[in-house]
Image (cartoon, rainbow, N blue to C red; front, side):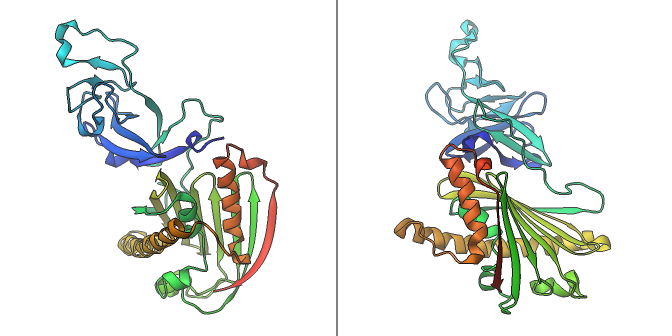
Length: 340
């Protein structure tokens, strides 16, 4: 198993307009992403095979992309279908073909898979309740100067919230929480107990009667985290992040905040968008500092029991990095107490 066996978001569907080309990087590979003549997404290596210009700087016409340097034209399969300098003497040749990648469009996202021969036919992660009646989704996109593993761990880490997001998300109250962390089949699940009102600015709106919250965090190989809060009927929330590896130290994160607040759904949108961006910008700064230290001193963590969820995530990503299937790891469940 390899990281390039999986599907990665390269853009939102509505970003990929007809006759527009987007420049993207996934796992260090440069991509030119556009729509073909049928409106389907296409991804080619962002390199003209002629004189090494970048196709993403060219233009798209009738579902084909033209290099900005000498005008070579490529179709959706990466085949050169026109060379201006050859005029009427041009003849298509199968050796004149740049590398193309499989694409999928799902839940309002465009996905790309880099491998030509996947070890297994995985599917993109299904976004919870996307476009379902009674649910709203707010999407935000942010770039982190850190790797996928550290980003994913941050998104499902409770202890940092009181320090990095004081008052906004949580405050330091020294409340005792219980957590059951389970690793199984390439995923990690953490279920929390004893949470009630430590929810930051919107605690009274989200859980004004102080019910115990059903809260589950999860990680799904290789790069998806999901945070689920069920506070009461019509007070439900999912925060799902897909961390796309651009390079070893650059991760582009697509986050869906999907919620059911009943009659407040539409009114809540601007507040949710602003709050999500505010919190994520704080995480961007925190993870940039972490990466500076990692580059100087290396990755040496002094873990506490509350970090069990991170240890499990690392075990899964390390297996994939070594070309192994993390689903072969033994199932494991740990119960932990910690304070926030």
